Image (cartoon, rainbow, N blue to C red; front, top):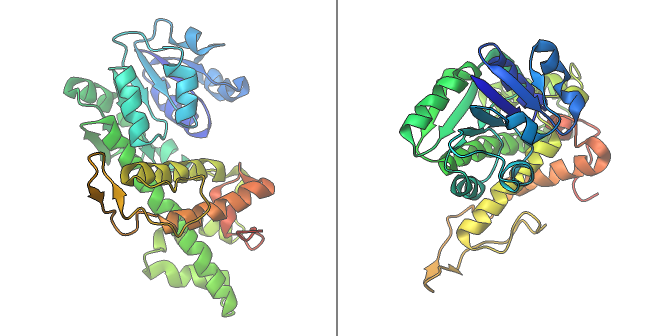
Length: 316
């Protein structure tokens, strides 16, 4: 199958390499040097998105966020009628609905996991579209990316986007929990290694195991798996999604994490009561930690930069 692959960053490259084994790929990236690894593996390289999609039977995109999708794809009406568009970009449910309305063959296919599972073909993958036949086609196409037990077809792109935001919410909040656990350990004279060990039987065991090598200094954050910029962008999508759903004016650009959306009105004038937690205080705490490191020049580092002893405190 002839596939156009748009966006060959860290994750996009790993996904494209799996497809290259069985398909004819033409790739494009805004920074052309990031296509070199795929070119060496046998992919064609296009100078523009328009050139990349010419003659393609499927278009796959792996871009930084919804604004990049609009700029590259929906704005210029890049997808030809009838061509399936497989979008792995992390977007909000509202963004997914917008893209599906613009392109009927849009399939939301967010992936869950970092570069290690991507290389091993062990990611979690959602495939979201109401078109059952198209869903089955895409499930088969992306199977090389996924742990079979974590490959899930759902009936809308918005539902797939929700699943991805839920996964990254858990990741961001648990990373903030580990940051605070390490601070508690230091305050009590408990070495970081002992803190990581003690967390092994707690709800933070997963993040402690995942990010332990960074905390111990066994890995540097400069070449990490998931950048602070990327997860901060996703945290803002979470905050804005909940704000839109509850009618709150406290979105991701508001620094006040104490506000509640309780008492907002529905369109018909009736009172809307938000679920407790709708101000997302834990997500906002994680975002503040990430933003502090981004401001310190570490946005392109692995997000475990917030866990290091030299990480910038929030509010500095």
